Image (tube, rainbow, N blue to C red; front, side):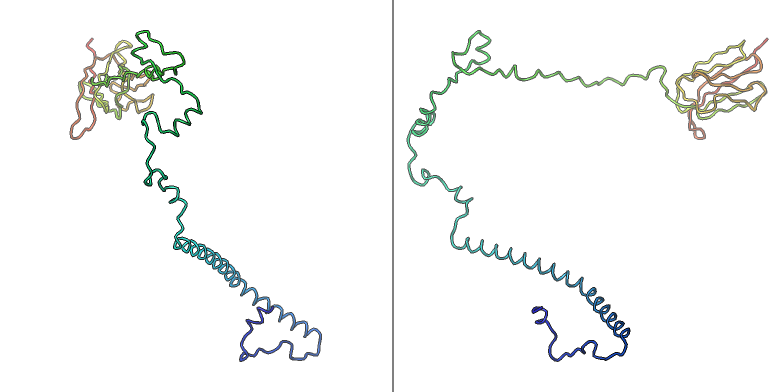
Length: 283
């Protein structure tokens, strides 16, 4: 409360006291009290967020002051001539500051090193037998460390597979190389033409069965994209057909013969064309 009183408004600002107006009834006084309490509560709720922010800012300021004091103390110690621990550890030993290092054979070590060696006992013999000597039957002396043969520790390098420079192998005879995308039938005075549009040029085997009334077209290397069973609108010779086990069966009204050829793509036809001409068989 003393802090709040110190923050009181100046004497030039006068605030009217509460409840300075007399009221006759108790209900009026209770209503006035409730109104005053509600106004006070509204003011406190309005000031609460600001007070919370001020408390948070005060905590941040205290943390910054502590960090500033720590930095000030470190700078003062550095200016007084104190050498950091890292620099002390990196200073050269006393022997390198002008004192002469004890003479002795580099291989045998200095006098202190010899004394340490005497306390530790004689060192084990380090004479080893090289792989060349071992192949001649020589054995290491008694008490010597066992030799480690690098040739045994290393795994045998596997020979790399040669890079194939030959041409790629041809696809298996039964692999799919293209698709049948369209089929056309046309009747002419002396023949009926059946055309299959295919996406790849591939040899196709054909034969006649059922007393030359069914044409069998081998589509093992071509993917059929139509229905399995179909009927023909041109009934002069071809009535319909079916596809089963990679073969196209074309049903004919009477015995017939055929001729076939494959045409390459042209400006109007982008696919290859398997053209089959069917003729009436001579009696």
